[in-house]
Length: 149
Image (spheres, rainbow, N blue to C red):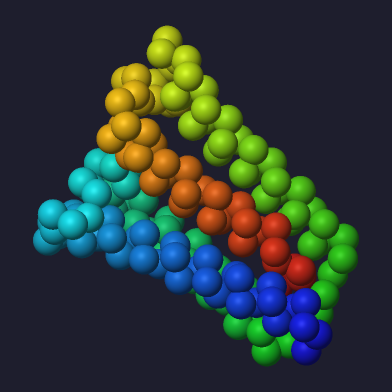
C-alpha cells in the first residue's frame, strides 16, 4: 500500500472514530445524561426524531467503517473519476455546512434552519459548532475517499 493511501486510511479511520464518539455522546445524553457532555439538544442539528437520526447515523458510520476497511485492505480498487466526484461532493458539503454556521451566526434574522435564535453569546457559538464539526468530519471523509468502495 502506498504511503499516501496509508495516510488517507489513517485520517479516514480517525474521522470515523470521531464521528462514532459524537454518535455515542448524543446517545449517552439521551439515555443517561452526563454533566461533562454538551446537552442533548446541542447535538441535535435537525428536526428529525432521535430514533430516525440514530438509525441514519449508524448507517453512515457503517459505510464509513466499510470504506476504511476496503481501502485499508486493498479490496477497493482506486477509481480516480469517482474519487474526484467524492472530493467535489465533500468540498461542497463542507462549504454548505460552513455557510450555514456563518449565516446563522452573523445574520440575526436568518431562517430557523440557520439558527433558531441568535448564536451570540459565546456558549451558543460553541453549541453551533457541534453540528458543524459533525458535517465537516463527514465532508472530509468524503474528500479523502480515494476509491468508490
